[in-house]
Amino acid sequence: MKKLLLTVVSIMFATTSFAQNALVASLSHGTTIKYFYGVTALKDAVDAAESGDIINLSEGIFGAANIDKAITLRGAGIDIESPTYINGEFSIEIPSTDTRQLTMEGITCQNKVTLKGSFNSPCFVKNQIQQIAGYDETDAVKNITIVNCKVLDGVGVKGTSSVFLVNSFSGDISRTETATVTATNCVLYTYVGSGRFDNAQLYNCILSAPYGSPESALSETCQAVNCVSTRVNGRYYGNIFHNGCINCVYDAQGIINNVETFELTDEAKESFKGADGTEVGIYGGMKPYNPTPSYPIITSLTADSQTDEDGGLNNVKVIVSNPK
Image (cartoon, rainbow, N blue to C red):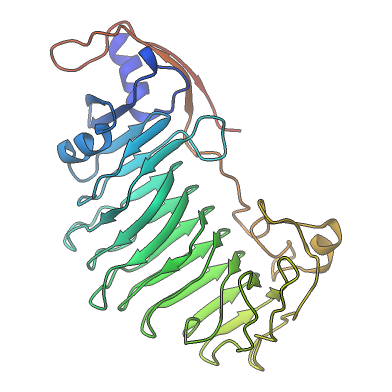
């Protein structure tokens, strides 16, 4: 029974109570489970992990750690009373020969996350991240997927990297001309000049410029379909849609009901539809924004304060709830 409970903990770790409110990272490698404690728990777990392992973090604020292997990293969630935070900048650079996928979910990253090298298909789901940035012009990180996330200061890919934004919010998107961005049902706060939107494909998106009054249009190398530009806090936005854009609406005023959640007004939900008939922005499309983690959440975990000689917990009791 004890082994079963520990297995549950390793796969689905997000806790609102742990012995003496400790920061805990559980590392699952097959049927083997290890626990690490304190501010350095994430770094200790990453150092001990192998590609394909799962690291689960409790609520609380963990120190950052550079990631150099394709792990799955899970937290307690973002829009909850007791989230999981990573404090400090960190980089992700995985060997290009590693065919496994790096996945991060349910975590608030309070600083910049830098993607380096030429690995493939990192996936960010239901996170809040200050910024996702490329490192230099030699980068070729392909198929960067960002789903149901808030990237407050935006995405800045470089080199020949490619990024797919799905039902997410992103601040300023800055990148090189050779990188590509595809955004579906997103809210993008950004400028459009200086080539920042070259080679971009935008579908069912809302675009705004909260920090100025740009007059530039999207580059003609871009495609925008069923997109809407709007004003935030009364600032003016130029007519960004060039003649090649399809079914786009310029300067639709007052369509965002809440600038924190990006919910549309009831009238806007009916007036501005994507190609699939659902509303534009992050609550339409096939993956409407939902910050609840996709895995079951441990709402209570208690154990003896002393561990066994292998780092295992003694007398574990857990209560698990399914995501709603």
